[in-house]
Image (cartoon, rainbow, N blue to C red; front, side, top):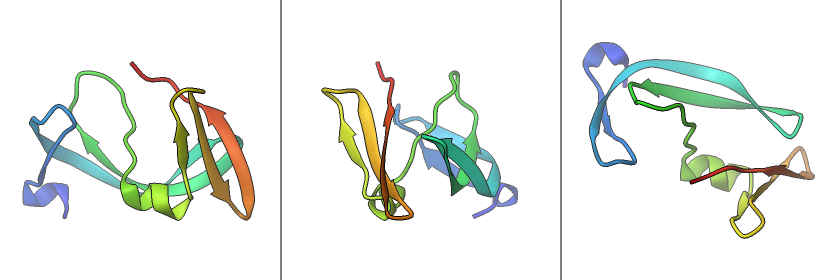
Length: 86
């Protein structure tokens, strides 16, 4: 998939969005750890980062909504960071 091929995705709000560009192996900093991710840039009205189930599985993520924390594993370390959501 590439932006040149006119790719579209269905966003969280169920609206079809055009993929503007891709960023391969960008580094996402979470809890002082840099983790490589592939990004799909789409046109939306507010900034948001959504991660896929493949990423959640790879880093053994636990979302603790009651505590508003994301717990994950990287390089055999268990790390935790606060999360915000509406």
